[in-house]
Structure formats: C-alpha cells, structure tokens
Image (cartoon, rainbow, N blue to C red; front, side):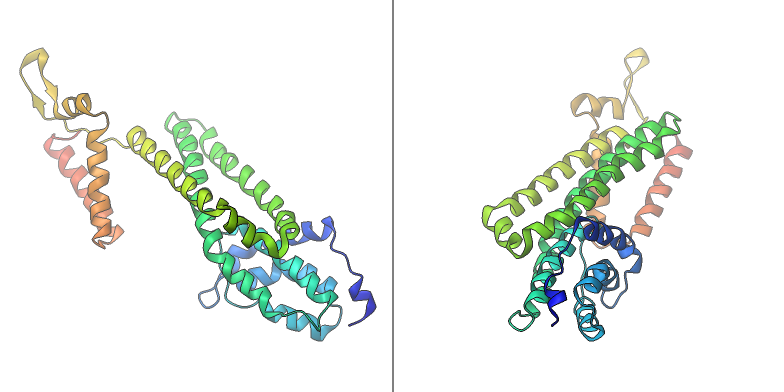
Length: 274
C-alpha cells in the first residue's frame, strides 16, 4: 500500500457524498442480493478515495456487493460503520481481517431493521398518515403536503445524521447498543407507540354504522349507538378484529377487501348499515 493511501482522511464532505449516493438504494433493490447494489453505490465515494489502485478498489467493491438489506431510512448508519472499518483496513491492510466488515453489516441487519421498521414504518409513517388523512377528510389540499413533510423531514434528518453517527461509533456500536439495552428498549418502545397510534386511527377514521333500530319512537336507538354507549368505537374494533382473524388464517388480502366491499354493498342495499 502506498503511503498516500495511509494518510487519507475521511471528511464531512465525504460523508455528505455517501448520504446523497445512498438515496437510490431502495430503488436498486433486487431479489437475489436485495440492497447490495445500492449499498455499494453509497460506499463508492469513500472506496474511490481510500483505494486509488484499481485492484484494491475492485476488491473493496466486491466486498460490498454481498447480500444486505435494512430499513432504507437507517441505511446510512451501517454505511458509516463500514466507512470506519474500511478506513482502518486501508491504513493497515496486512493485519486487518476484511471478513469482519461484512460480519458487522450482517449482524446489524436484523436489530436495526426491527428498530427502523418499528419507528419509521410502524410509528412515524402512521402518524404522518393520520395528520394527512385528517386534513384531507376536511377537503384541505394541505393533507398530502402535511403527510409528505411530517414523514420526510425527520426521516431525512435522521438519515443524514446517521452517516456521521455510524462513522464515529465505528466497530464499537454493536456492543454499546446491545450491552446497554438501548436496542431492546427502542424496539419495544417503537412497537408500543405504533400500536397506540394504529388503535387511535381505527377508532377515529374507520366507520361501521349498524343502523338497525332498537326501541320505539323518540327513545329508539341504533345498534351502533347502543354499543358506542357501552364501549366507544366497539363496532369498528370488532370489524378490525375480524379482518385480523382472517389475516392470521392466511386469507388473501384481495379476498378480504372483496369481502369488505360485499358487506358494505349488502348493508347499504338492505339498510342495516349506513
């Protein structure tokens, strides 16, 4: 290895390049090795700087074309880890075990995907949808705009910061997160918040109104009104429970959507739903 390569330093500008280069990673997903092409593309600015020799560069690119997949929003955290390890490898290639680079990537896939899916897809996206749908139901053009902003502002901010965060932590990140229990706490917290938000959305935005009257004259109430007096939102909750039961029985989502359509049409035609 040349002495020039030993003196290469990773700068904030380099990390910014990685952030922008990694943005198409989800679009480059493939069935064989999933996010590997996008990952290698994200690493390319660093690899080109660390390995000016074409043979070394080729070997480094080949390392990052192994099977890899993680929640796209936190991809840059793993990239930062890989950058720190590649930097160490470039400084001491004879004594650095290159297998450890992919070993760390593989170890991070599962835990980070659990946290990433729970927070970004199960919590943040649901909250953004709740805000956007609420405005859209009122006829406001701000609905889709609010969804876009509520989701993407924290998404890209975290994604940008995660690049330098992962780089600074380096190879110690796994032991620090796992040993302190932060990873487990994040996964449990994200799951709880996600369930709370989904439950609130079910009660507020799903309407199943059984209009069959019970009683006579002005004292008559519909079945839904009676049930809501016992437990507010009980009918929508029971309907969601039915859908969940069918889903657990491996019923096709297309069949369930068709079932909902048929129930709605029959209910409207016969007048027992409204």
